[in-house]
Image (cartoon, rainbow, N blue to C red; front, top):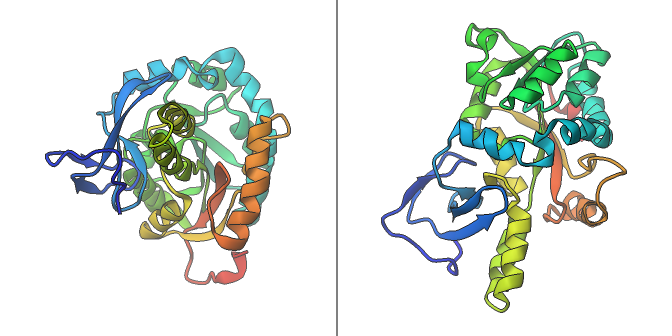
Length: 308
Protein backbone atom coordinates (compact mmCIF):
# COMPACT_ATOMS: atom_id res chain seq x y z
CA UNK A 1 0.00 0.00 0.00
CA UNK A 2 1.06 3.58 -0.56
CA UNK A 3 1.85 5.72 2.44
CA UNK A 4 -0.99 7.93 3.60
CA UNK A 5 1.01 10.73 5.15
CA UNK A 6 2.39 12.60 2.16
CA UNK A 7 -0.73 13.70 0.26
CA UNK A 8 -2.36 12.59 -2.97
CA UNK A 9 -3.22 14.11 -6.30
CA UNK A 10 -6.19 12.31 -7.94
CA UNK A 11 -5.36 13.79 -11.33
CA UNK A 12 -1.75 12.67 -11.30
CA UNK A 13 -0.50 9.79 -13.43
CA UNK A 14 3.26 9.42 -13.39
CA UNK A 15 5.33 6.56 -14.72
CA UNK A 16 7.67 5.06 -12.15
CA UNK A 17 11.22 5.33 -13.49
CA UNK A 18 12.26 2.40 -11.26
CA UNK A 19 9.85 -0.28 -12.55
CA UNK A 20 7.97 1.40 -15.44
CA UNK A 21 4.51 1.20 -13.90
CA UNK A 22 2.00 3.99 -14.46
CA UNK A 23 0.13 4.46 -11.20
CA UNK A 24 -2.69 7.04 -11.16
CA UNK A 25 -3.07 8.81 -7.84
CA UNK A 26 0.28 7.75 -6.42
CA UNK A 27 1.30 9.78 -3.39
CA UNK A 28 3.99 12.41 -3.42
CA UNK A 29 6.12 14.81 -1.46
CA UNK A 30 7.90 18.00 -2.42
CA UNK A 31 11.61 17.87 -1.61
CA UNK A 32 14.53 20.24 -2.12
CA UNK A 33 17.66 18.28 -3.02
CA UNK A 34 21.07 19.89 -2.80
CA UNK A 35 21.96 19.35 -6.45
CA UNK A 36 18.55 19.11 -8.13
CA UNK A 37 16.58 21.84 -6.35
CA UNK A 38 12.91 21.45 -5.44
CA UNK A 39 11.16 18.55 -7.13
CA UNK A 40 8.09 16.38 -6.79
CA UNK A 41 8.66 12.82 -5.59
CA UNK A 42 6.14 10.00 -5.73
CA UNK A 43 5.86 6.50 -4.33
CA UNK A 44 5.06 3.65 -6.68
CA UNK A 45 2.21 1.52 -5.37
CA UNK A 46 3.57 -1.45 -7.34
CA UNK A 47 7.31 -1.68 -6.56
CA UNK A 48 7.27 0.68 -3.52
CA UNK A 49 10.10 2.79 -4.94
CA UNK A 50 10.24 6.53 -4.35
CA UNK A 51 10.83 8.25 -7.67
CA UNK A 52 11.40 11.70 -9.14
CA UNK A 53 8.44 12.45 -11.40
CA UNK A 54 9.84 15.45 -13.28
CA UNK A 55 10.70 14.91 -16.98
CA UNK A 56 14.20 13.70 -17.78
CA UNK A 57 16.50 16.23 -19.44
CA UNK A 58 19.91 14.89 -20.46
CA UNK A 59 21.67 18.26 -20.44
CA UNK A 60 20.28 19.05 -17.01
CA UNK A 61 21.42 15.63 -15.79
CA UNK A 62 24.93 16.33 -17.08
CA UNK A 63 24.90 19.80 -15.48
CA UNK A 64 23.88 18.50 -12.09
CA UNK A 65 26.43 15.65 -12.28
CA UNK A 66 29.28 18.13 -12.79
CA UNK A 67 28.35 19.71 -9.45
CA UNK A 68 28.94 16.44 -7.59
CA UNK A 69 32.32 15.07 -6.51
CA UNK A 70 31.98 12.11 -8.89
CA UNK A 71 31.34 14.46 -11.81
CA UNK A 72 34.48 16.61 -11.54
CA UNK A 73 37.78 15.48 -13.01
CA UNK A 74 40.05 15.64 -9.96
CA UNK A 75 37.66 14.09 -7.44
CA UNK A 76 36.10 11.74 -9.98
CA UNK A 77 39.49 10.27 -10.86
CA UNK A 78 40.30 9.95 -7.15
CA UNK A 79 37.19 7.81 -6.69
CA UNK A 80 38.80 5.16 -8.90
CA UNK A 81 41.17 4.39 -6.04
CA UNK A 82 38.51 4.81 -3.34
CA UNK A 83 36.29 2.16 -4.98
CA UNK A 84 38.95 -0.52 -5.49
CA UNK A 85 37.41 -2.71 -2.77
CA UNK A 86 34.08 -2.72 -4.60
CA UNK A 87 35.70 -3.21 -8.00
CA UNK A 88 37.69 -6.21 -6.76
CA UNK A 89 34.59 -7.80 -5.23
CA UNK A 90 32.62 -7.34 -8.46
CA UNK A 91 35.47 -8.62 -10.60
CA UNK A 92 35.77 -11.76 -8.49
CA UNK A 93 32.07 -12.53 -9.04
CA UNK A 94 32.21 -11.70 -12.76
CA UNK A 95 35.30 -13.83 -13.37
CA UNK A 96 33.54 -16.77 -11.77
CA UNK A 97 30.32 -16.38 -13.78
CA UNK A 98 31.64 -15.29 -17.21
CA UNK A 99 35.44 -15.55 -17.42
CA UNK A 100 37.39 -13.78 -20.20
CA UNK A 101 37.89 -13.46 -23.04
CA UNK A 102 34.60 -11.77 -23.73
CA UNK A 103 32.88 -8.43 -24.22
CA UNK A 104 32.27 -6.44 -21.02
CA UNK A 105 30.15 -3.28 -21.12
CA UNK A 106 30.21 -0.95 -18.11
CA UNK A 107 27.12 1.27 -18.03
CA UNK A 108 27.88 4.53 -16.24
CA UNK A 109 31.63 4.00 -16.48
CA UNK A 110 32.51 7.41 -14.99
CA UNK A 111 36.30 7.88 -14.99
CA UNK A 112 37.06 4.30 -15.98
CA UNK A 113 38.19 2.71 -12.72
CA UNK A 114 36.37 -0.57 -13.26
CA UNK A 115 37.04 -0.58 -17.01
CA UNK A 116 40.78 -0.51 -16.36
CA UNK A 117 40.50 -3.46 -13.99
CA UNK A 118 38.36 -5.40 -16.46
CA UNK A 119 40.75 -4.71 -19.33
CA UNK A 120 43.64 -5.93 -17.17
CA UNK A 121 41.69 -9.12 -16.45
CA UNK A 122 41.45 -9.87 -20.17
CA UNK A 123 38.04 -8.55 -21.19
CA UNK A 124 37.32 -6.56 -24.34
CA UNK A 125 35.83 -3.51 -22.64
CA UNK A 126 33.34 -0.81 -23.62
CA UNK A 127 32.05 2.01 -21.42
CA UNK A 128 28.84 4.08 -21.59
CA UNK A 129 28.91 7.50 -19.93
CA UNK A 130 26.92 10.76 -20.18
CA UNK A 131 29.67 13.07 -18.85
CA UNK A 132 31.88 14.34 -21.71
CA UNK A 133 34.89 15.10 -19.50
CA UNK A 134 34.84 11.56 -18.08
CA UNK A 135 34.57 10.12 -21.60
CA UNK A 136 37.57 12.18 -22.72
CA UNK A 137 39.61 11.03 -19.71
CA UNK A 138 38.81 7.38 -20.38
CA UNK A 139 39.72 7.73 -24.03
CA UNK A 140 43.07 9.25 -23.01
CA UNK A 141 43.72 5.93 -21.24
CA UNK A 142 42.98 4.02 -24.42
CA UNK A 143 39.56 2.86 -23.23
CA UNK A 144 36.63 2.59 -25.63
CA UNK A 145 33.85 4.71 -24.10
CA UNK A 146 30.72 6.00 -25.84
CA UNK A 147 29.23 9.35 -24.81
CA UNK A 148 25.54 8.41 -24.60
CA UNK A 149 22.77 7.95 -22.04
CA UNK A 150 21.38 4.54 -22.97
CA UNK A 151 22.42 1.07 -24.08
CA UNK A 152 20.07 1.63 -27.03
CA UNK A 153 22.41 4.34 -28.38
CA UNK A 154 25.58 2.24 -28.56
CA UNK A 155 26.29 1.75 -32.30
CA UNK A 156 27.56 -1.82 -32.17
CA UNK A 157 24.68 -2.96 -29.93
CA UNK A 158 22.22 -1.33 -32.32
CA UNK A 159 23.60 -3.65 -35.00
CA UNK A 160 23.03 -6.82 -33.02
CA UNK A 161 26.35 -7.38 -31.23
CA UNK A 162 26.12 -9.58 -28.14
CA UNK A 163 27.66 -8.92 -24.73
CA UNK A 164 29.18 -11.38 -22.25
CA UNK A 165 29.03 -9.09 -19.21
CA UNK A 166 27.14 -5.91 -18.34
CA UNK A 167 28.19 -4.02 -15.21
CA UNK A 168 26.28 -1.11 -13.66
CA UNK A 169 28.09 0.13 -10.58
CA UNK A 170 26.33 3.03 -8.85
CA UNK A 171 24.49 4.11 -11.98
CA UNK A 172 21.06 2.45 -12.24
CA UNK A 173 19.34 4.83 -9.79
CA UNK A 174 20.07 7.74 -12.15
CA UNK A 175 18.17 6.14 -15.07
CA UNK A 176 14.84 7.62 -16.09
CA UNK A 177 13.55 4.27 -17.42
CA UNK A 178 15.21 1.39 -15.60
CA UNK A 179 12.88 -1.30 -16.96
CA UNK A 180 13.70 -0.37 -20.55
CA UNK A 181 17.46 -0.39 -19.89
CA UNK A 182 17.31 -3.79 -18.20
CA UNK A 183 15.21 -5.23 -21.03
CA UNK A 184 17.76 -4.03 -23.59
CA UNK A 185 20.63 -5.50 -21.59
CA UNK A 186 18.85 -8.82 -21.22
CA UNK A 187 18.33 -8.97 -24.99
CA UNK A 188 21.96 -8.05 -25.72
CA UNK A 189 23.43 -10.59 -23.26
CA UNK A 190 24.51 -13.85 -24.82
CA UNK A 191 23.07 -17.02 -23.26
CA UNK A 192 25.19 -17.60 -20.16
CA UNK A 193 26.01 -13.88 -19.91
CA UNK A 194 26.22 -11.92 -16.66
CA UNK A 195 24.77 -8.69 -15.29
CA UNK A 196 26.48 -7.20 -12.21
CA UNK A 197 24.85 -4.27 -10.41
CA UNK A 198 25.94 -2.29 -7.38
CA UNK A 199 22.72 -0.61 -6.34
CA UNK A 200 21.46 1.53 -3.45
CA UNK A 201 18.64 0.45 -1.14
CA UNK A 202 17.61 3.32 1.16
CA UNK A 203 13.87 3.33 0.44
CA UNK A 204 13.34 2.02 3.96
CA UNK A 205 15.08 5.15 5.27
CA UNK A 206 12.70 7.36 3.27
CA UNK A 207 9.74 5.53 4.82
CA UNK A 208 11.27 6.00 8.26
CA UNK A 209 11.86 9.69 7.53
CA UNK A 210 8.24 10.19 6.51
CA UNK A 211 7.07 8.65 9.78
CA UNK A 212 9.57 10.71 11.79
CA UNK A 213 8.40 13.86 10.03
CA UNK A 214 5.03 13.55 11.78
CA UNK A 215 6.73 14.19 15.12
CA UNK A 216 9.81 16.18 14.14
CA UNK A 217 9.51 17.72 10.69
CA UNK A 218 13.10 19.00 10.42
CA UNK A 219 14.75 15.72 11.39
CA UNK A 220 12.42 13.70 9.21
CA UNK A 221 13.17 15.95 6.25
CA UNK A 222 16.93 15.61 6.79
CA UNK A 223 16.65 11.83 6.87
CA UNK A 224 14.63 11.79 3.63
CA UNK A 225 17.17 14.04 1.88
CA UNK A 226 20.03 11.86 3.07
CA UNK A 227 18.31 8.74 1.79
CA UNK A 228 17.40 10.15 -1.64
CA UNK A 229 20.69 12.04 -2.13
CA UNK A 230 20.73 13.30 -5.75
CA UNK A 231 19.24 10.10 -7.18
CA UNK A 232 16.23 9.81 -9.49
CA UNK A 233 14.69 6.94 -7.55
CA UNK A 234 15.14 4.77 -4.47
CA UNK A 235 13.98 1.19 -4.98
CA UNK A 236 13.81 -1.59 -2.37
CA UNK A 237 16.28 -4.38 -3.11
CA UNK A 238 13.53 -7.02 -3.06
CA UNK A 239 11.64 -5.11 -5.77
CA UNK A 240 14.81 -4.76 -7.85
CA UNK A 241 15.38 -8.51 -7.75
CA UNK A 242 11.81 -9.10 -8.95
CA UNK A 243 12.37 -6.63 -11.79
CA UNK A 244 15.48 -8.52 -12.94
CA UNK A 245 13.51 -11.76 -12.92
CA UNK A 246 10.76 -10.11 -14.99
CA UNK A 247 13.22 -9.43 -17.84
CA UNK A 248 14.39 -13.06 -17.91
CA UNK A 249 17.46 -12.97 -15.67
CA UNK A 250 18.24 -15.41 -12.84
CA UNK A 251 19.65 -14.03 -9.59
CA UNK A 252 22.73 -15.94 -8.44
CA UNK A 253 23.95 -13.50 -5.78
CA UNK A 254 22.30 -10.62 -3.90
CA UNK A 255 23.81 -9.23 -0.71
CA UNK A 256 25.28 -6.07 0.81
CA UNK A 257 28.43 -8.18 1.24
CA UNK A 258 31.00 -6.84 -1.23
CA UNK A 259 29.11 -3.60 -1.94
CA UNK A 260 31.13 -1.32 0.38
CA UNK A 261 33.31 0.97 -1.74
CA UNK A 262 36.48 0.37 0.25
CA UNK A 263 38.37 0.90 3.53
CA UNK A 264 38.22 4.67 3.02
CA UNK A 265 34.40 4.73 3.11
CA UNK A 266 32.76 6.98 5.73
CA UNK A 267 32.29 5.45 9.17
CA UNK A 268 28.50 5.71 8.89
CA UNK A 269 28.60 3.64 5.68
CA UNK A 270 30.82 1.03 7.30
CA UNK A 271 28.43 0.73 10.26
CA UNK A 272 25.45 0.49 7.90
CA UNK A 273 27.00 -2.38 5.97
CA UNK A 274 28.28 -4.13 9.10
CA UNK A 275 24.80 -4.12 10.64
CA UNK A 276 22.74 -4.44 7.47
CA UNK A 277 24.61 -7.31 5.82
CA UNK A 278 23.62 -10.03 8.32
CA UNK A 279 20.10 -8.55 8.50
CA UNK A 280 19.70 -9.16 4.77
CA UNK A 281 21.63 -12.42 4.53
CA UNK A 282 19.76 -14.04 7.43
CA UNK A 283 16.32 -12.45 7.38
CA UNK A 284 16.05 -10.63 3.99
CA UNK A 285 15.45 -7.46 5.99
CA UNK A 286 16.82 -4.22 4.46
CA UNK A 287 19.27 -2.33 6.60
CA UNK A 288 22.43 -1.80 4.58
CA UNK A 289 22.62 1.25 2.28
CA UNK A 290 23.38 -0.81 -0.82
CA UNK A 291 23.92 -4.25 -2.31
CA UNK A 292 25.79 -6.19 -4.96
CA UNK A 293 23.61 -8.20 -7.34
CA UNK A 294 24.76 -10.78 -9.90
CA UNK A 295 22.27 -12.17 -12.43
CA UNK A 296 22.67 -14.61 -15.33
CA UNK A 297 20.92 -15.11 -18.63
CA UNK A 298 20.89 -18.88 -18.31
CA UNK A 299 21.74 -21.30 -21.08
CA UNK A 300 19.69 -24.45 -21.46
CA UNK A 301 22.49 -26.50 -19.87
CA UNK A 302 22.96 -24.24 -16.85
CA UNK A 303 21.47 -25.05 -13.47
CA UNK A 304 21.69 -23.97 -9.86
CA UNK A 305 25.41 -24.63 -9.52
CA UNK A 306 26.12 -20.86 -9.66
CA UNK A 307 23.73 -20.08 -6.85
CA UNK A 308 25.01 -19.26 -3.41
